[in-house]
Length: 254
Ligand code: DGL
Image 1 (tube, protein in one colour):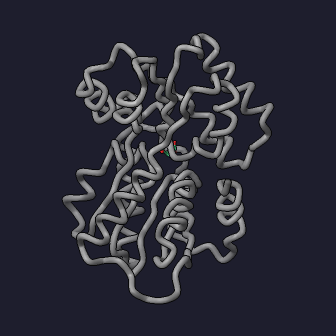
Image 2 (cartoon, rainbow, N blue to C red; image 1 turned 45 degrees about the vertical axis):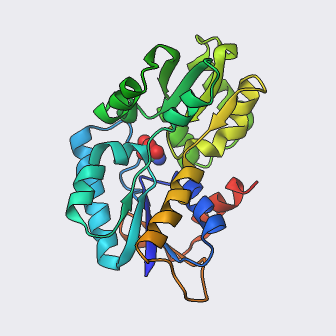
């Protein structure tokens, strides 16, 4: 059986890429809700409906585990999904905890979608850590659109980030947390903008480490020979031509 990866669009490809590296023997279904992307600027109720529909479809295709490779979808529906389905479901949240712990008291900048930052799940996470005074959150919704439209021109991205982050003293930040799975595509651009000793982190490695553990603990790891096959779906339609998604997989490669 395959492992499902779900995102509003191409962001989850950054997480799938990590899975292909760490779990090459597994096979995958990737579902991008291309009809409804972006999620991060829509209402919670609307996004919840989209998620339930997409995961229902994936469950029907037969998956042994699901990675909700989307911070926004996780904050809206992860508990509901876990109640509904019996297979293991992993979510993603901005990696604020390790950022605060390894940060030597410098400031932490969390960049994510508007919906992720306004949700209770994120607010509780920050409050629980007890370091709210050093954590700043900035919504960067247009970065999702850039990734969806395959805009990787460094000058365009730098201009956008400069405009959005211009009022912050970037030297103050020890860590930037990429709290949206679309953002790791632009990791190098973030690194250019911030001092060299600022860490730009995402939750992708941690999520796949955890996926590995969940598969082992539940005796779900595959023992078949042929792995690394991916079937791509765009809002319920099987992609006859995987070219678009494979291009994204290529650019995330170091
Ligand atoms: N990739 C998603 C996330 O991690 C959401 C992007 C969007 O659809 O707005 O939050």
